Image (tube, rainbow, N blue to C red; front, side, top):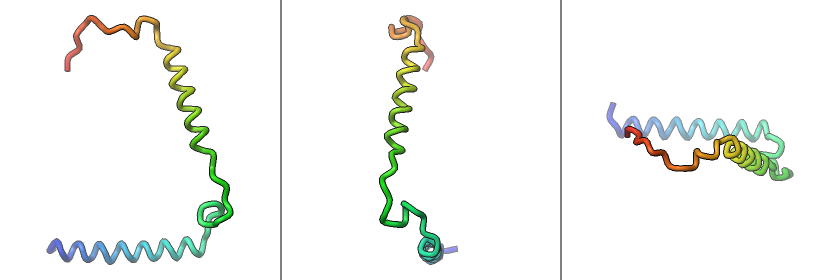
Length: 76
């Protein structure tokens, strides 16, 4: 198949899928996502706190001498 033909078919299919997705979103609005009355989700704040807590815990679990450079060479 010629590349231009392939690209044209892809563009047509992409436009068709986007149109179907827009019609579906209009028919099935999601509360808080597709509507205007939605408070921002505090999910990232919780993820951030959990992530830093895990980093802190991991650093506490490391032995004291693990921060010093190793004397044995490592293969690359």
